[in-house]
Amino acid sequence: MISLKTIGKIILVCLTVLAVFITPASARSAADWVAEGNRAYDAQKMDAAVSAYDKALEAAPGDGRVLFNKGCALYMKKDYEGARDLFEQAALKAGDVSLEARSHFNMGNAELKTAENPDEADVKERLERVERSIAHYEKALALDPKMDAAAHNLEMARRTLKEMRDRIQKQKEAAKRQEQQRQRMQKDLEDLIKRQQNLSEKSREMENQSADSRHNSEELARNQSEIKNKTKELSQKMGQSAGKGKDEPMEKARTHLNEAAGNQEKARDRLNRSDYADARKEQEKASEAMEKALSELRKQGEGRGKSRSAKSQDKSGGQKPENKAEPRSARKPEAADQKKSERMGTQNPEKILEEEYKNRRRRQIFEGGGHRPVEKDW
Image (cartoon, rainbow, N blue to C red):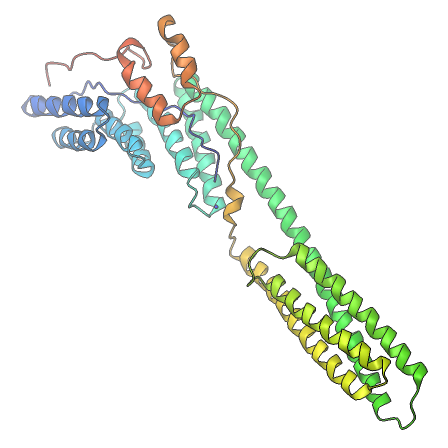
């Protein structure tokens, strides 16, 4: 999932007053639907707003401003994909630079919102969405250099992109270290298995000798004790690297090693008594358990290889970065609203929007001013 910190302090610029040039035959019905959509939008009834804007689009097909308004309503419904598509259409159909700039600005916002989806595990796709948001903010600024909100969100998106890339790089480095550690443990285990098998063979040789050799049995017992200690040390290392789940390959390997250490303990006791036959049986059990542990280690290595080839990424890669900066509105508020605007910087995006809607008549956040009556020639 690397989810992002709520990128939410982004600002959505929505236009709720239209000046659409259409044929007189459909003018009145289109105006009525737009007015109804605007009222529903102001009342935060987004389903009704979308329905009304759809009716307006039937009367004025492809009008950029109606498409823009519907996109704003979908954005408020958290349908960011649908909103982005409508803003894209609005940019293409825009009859003026101002609408085109705001369409790109809101496309950037929609891309950022989809990039923060915690269910999206494809980090590559999330990175591309943030990159696209940056491109849209840059386009908005190229069209309207005075759009402060676009400049602010551009900076925030760039910082978000850097944080994501840094986090992914750290995860790659951590994964590389873990794989190197797994490979070292695998090699150590392979060496221990060879030593255990060689010791088992020596026990077999002593088993077939007629004369007892106390010196040989003590030496074999010391060797067995050393292998047991090495096995326990390796088990502890695996415990530090294993995941939380009991079904994790590393944890399974550790369980087999603990079993092997128990067999090695018994083999050492029997060797001290020169009971080579029973010692060999315990040694063979230990080798078998160690082989199972080795199989689990190899399985984990193969699993990581497949994960890399599939370019999959753990959702923890989407941890949320801290956003320190606060957004500003698209245009500087009037003096009477300055303090209220500053307070809005600590709210969620939807709350920011709500405040913007309530104060729209008293603030000039769009080029050309705030709300005004619908043109009569609709």
